[in-house]
Length: 71
Image 1 (tube, rainbow, N blue to C red):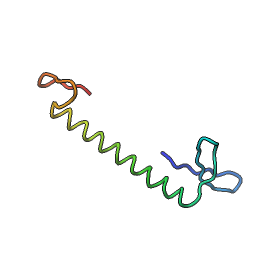
Image 2: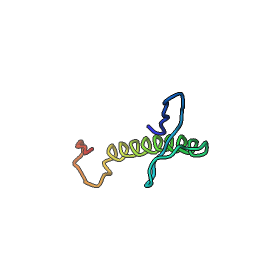
Image 3: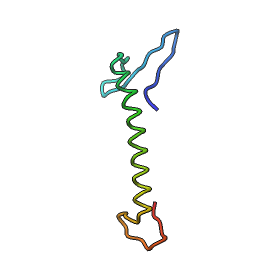
Image 4: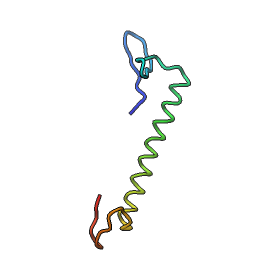
């Protein structure tokens, strides 16, 4: 999971990439990367919980007979 720190030759830096290449991150970019990585995990957890609830309530896109599940 991002962000990643590179340790090389006694130096420890966080790097990021964009369309022009890679670059060392400043403190604000590092902070933002850590915050957004935890938000992504929470969003995935919410989606999974919501999906399981939908399946258990037989409220999916495809209507199934009682007892059948489509994951």
